[in-house]
Image (cartoon, rainbow, N blue to C red; front, side, top):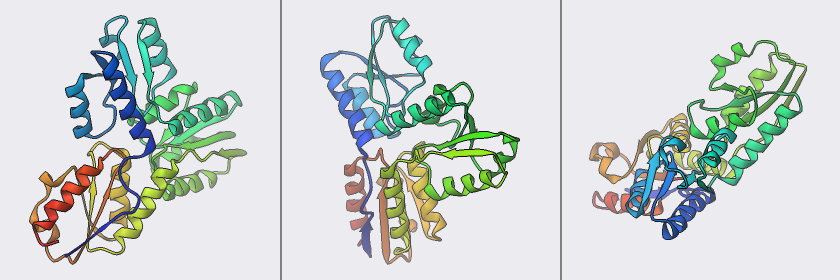
Length: 279
């Protein structure tokens, strides 16, 4: 058996920056609170927990004057304000591309556009971004387009980690409804797009595809979906502990990629595990 790796995989600059900021903060402060998991990878989260990072779900759980880390997914202006009211030291690890999306949504709203965002309404990035406008409509799939109604002026953006083809397809369906003005702003992360393209190209060359990363990671889930759409048998697992031999039964070529929050050592350990089966 042969193993092929996606050329573009693993940690992105935004995730790397968030981890670095957390580690730097923990060297200065004995206790740092992260508003939600800093990234969607339990190995990285557990490592930082051992260093003193505590995960909380709201700023109200943090004592007055404490230190709060805003994770790479960002947060709404309301959360920043609530943190200031509690006199918290704020360490902002928001990805620069998420920041850009936040600013674009705020600008579109100020210019009178009805902001429509394509993405997962339950994802923390989306929850944070829509806080930068008074009323953002989130569309998750084509079936939800009908509830838009007749809007004269739409500002259309997307979750940064969305599949480009999915965004294009939904955008086209919205345009077909016949609005007076639609302004589409590309808020996709080119790192994510490149990772998706690499996964698609690799999936077409292999018999079975492994996508390594957290089960709650949006970008990792997108990679797995893209690989499956290529007609390739695909497994989305966190690490080698979830591997079973039957997954590679009959396979001659194995493909591996990893989500933006997956450390490279997870990939290398997975390769070492496969080598025990003759890969």
